Image 1 (cartoon, helix red, strand yellow):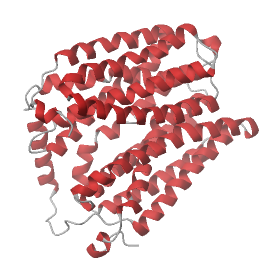
Image 2: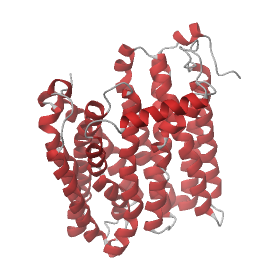
Image 3: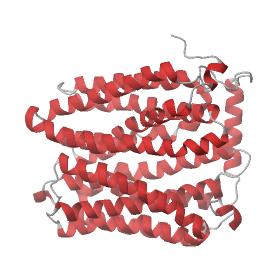
Length: 432
């Protein structure tokens, strides 16, 4: 079947028919690898240090997207990449499901999730590229809300509904079979979306009359993008800033779910999968969305320069919630849930500050889009690296002392934020 439709046909396809499903399909593999796999491997008894190491390392391909994009420009349409990567993810979900009863399950699942990670990162590149190629500037602004809504819907479904369902089913059919069912559900979802996109998605070749770049030309341009990126004013300060802004998050976010699920006698809270899914995937995800929206309004009202330090405080200090839970270990689900939902709300509120800082202070220039992508790739490394060591630290220190270290790790970010220089003037900093 041809993936390329005519230009006329492409223009006649309403974005509402494919934008929401594309961004849902972006979210599902990423959330599965970074969060759901954490809970699944924990249920199967993998040690915490190995869980946090592998689920952190597996998100590396999302930091390599600028390099993948050069190769992807050489052959094939954006639609082809979207559909093929969705089918690959569907197959991988199925293989993960059927590898669970095997003796070498741990090794197999890590290898399969690595394939899904590379496929998912390429899907992101193609999906974003299709969005920019097929939609006018006005349409891009109109549908940006649909992007975030359906990406977060995937997060709510996977980190909330599916984990909740796994907990319910495990009582009837056991842990292995319940997770097999969850992975099969994900496989079917991705397959249905891929087949749907074959039928309705435009080709992404609105500019197909332009001459394709050679590999050498693409690499030359990539080198120029990298070179000019590192020639920006204050760039090294900015890079240290964006890495440290999320460093404490990188430590906390991998261990926090394991801490919440760990038995009380091991210093944890002892949540079941159903309780975890209800708190994290629904209340927490919704709080993140509300916090992100309100954070945007807060910046637009006062300007980024004036509020960046307060946003860094709002983002980092609430990780104290997990320290308080480790100290007092409440048994009330209401108190536990309220703490997690509050932390997610402040996480969303404070995260928009870093996003806008990269857009407005690092990205501006000739290669604005590429430089923003490069900045986000480096930012993701700043979350990945502490995540890789977080499990080992938590085993060495215990949960209480580990979360004390997390709070200490927020201090460099706050100091750097207080003194961070702004390259561009206030008029450019304020969100219109």
